[in-house]
Amino acid sequence: MKSCVIENIPLIKNTDSGNFFLIAGPCVIESEDNIMEIAEKAVEITEKFKIPYIFKGSYRKANRSKSDSFTGIGDLKALKLLAKVRDRFSIPVITDIHSAQEAAMAAEYVDILQIPAFLCRQSDILEAAADTGKAVNIKKGQFLAPESMRFVAEKISETGNNNIMLTDRGTMFGYGDIVVDFRSIPVMQSTGYPVIMDITHSLQQPNQSSGVTGGKPELIETIAKAAIAVGADGIFMETHPEPSKAKSDGANMLKLEYLESLLEKLIRIRQVII
Image (cartoon, rainbow, N blue to C red; front, side, top):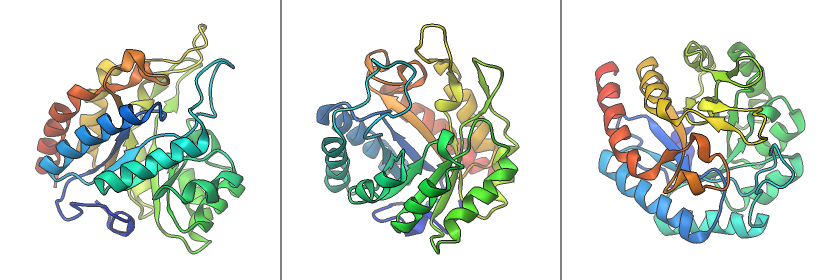
């Protein structure tokens, strides 16, 4: 695991464990009870396994297929809940931003700003995120070659902010499917920044005729194992106590009760390859 970013994120624990780090949480902030349940369980498991952990939750979902899809509980309310997770469990938190104007607002409540894949080439958003001084996690566009992510990272580093992480979330395969090219991990690692595999979003099936994104959660373990075997520095996954009732991305989420057994298997793989 690269040390150039992870050690600079406030509150991060277990950075000397030799493990991959984990970014996990619900797709979107639904309620205080929901996120506290997820965070408490994830903290318990990651402390047991000495896995550095970052809680993830989108304060608002701006990219939705249908106009009546759930987008959030209110920006400030959700951001304040993210800060509450950080304070209660002493863990860093990450959220997406969708415009340059959102960067400063979100930075008041979170430790890491995430740039969604569809927006990874938007210079004004990248520069605004960098200017906050927060760590920035950039998801590789489903349409972008991994080699091109070095130019994306340069837009951040040229501001003087080198707290950068890069995340692969698969590549579009036709109109309604996504595939993972695991060559992307070492290619993006050549930038010198930590590289994360977004497991659950890589299993989406977008552009369904129903207007609701589908997924293949039964392959979560497969993609996760392969990512660790290839040498990913971190893994990203969305998890929920009841994915079928999640208000966003339920079709490709990991059920919370399966998190511990999955991480235990991934640690064994990590121990073999390091």
